[in-house]
Image (cartoon, rainbow, N blue to C red; front, side, top):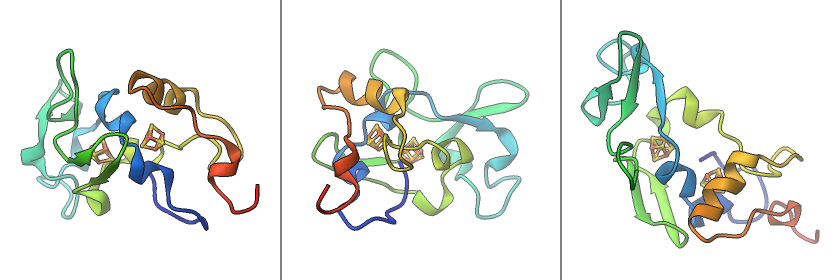
Length: 124
Ligand code: SF4
Ligand code: SF4
C-alpha cells in the first residue's frame, strides 16, 4: 500500500489485497523496540534471528493485523506512518508507469481486476 500523489482516489484505498496475501516481513530493527517511531513491536512476531513479520500473516487466510476495513471496498493501514520498508516499497501497478505482477496477483486472489494506467490520472 502506498501514498497518494496522484489526481484520482488512490486505488489502494479500495483494495488492500496485498496486505492480506503476502507476508510482510522485515529486518527486526525496524520495530520500535529498536527504532523509536518504527513498527509497533506488539503487532509483530519474531521469524528468526534477523527478521520479524506482521501478526496475522500466517496460515491459509493471511491478513495483516494493521489492515483496517473491508478488502476490495474501503481499507487503510492503521500504522501507515510507521509501516515497514517492505510495505513502503511495494508499488501498485502503473503508479510509476509499470505493472507490478505481485500487485496484480494479490488483487486476482481477491477477485479484483488488475489496475490499469488510467486508474492513476484523469482523462486517460
Ligand atoms: S494489491 Fe496493489 S492496489 Fe491493492 S493495496 Fe496492494 S499495492 Fe495497492
Ligand atoms: S503494515 Fe500496513 S501496509 Fe504493511 S501489510 Fe500491514 S496493513 Fe499493509
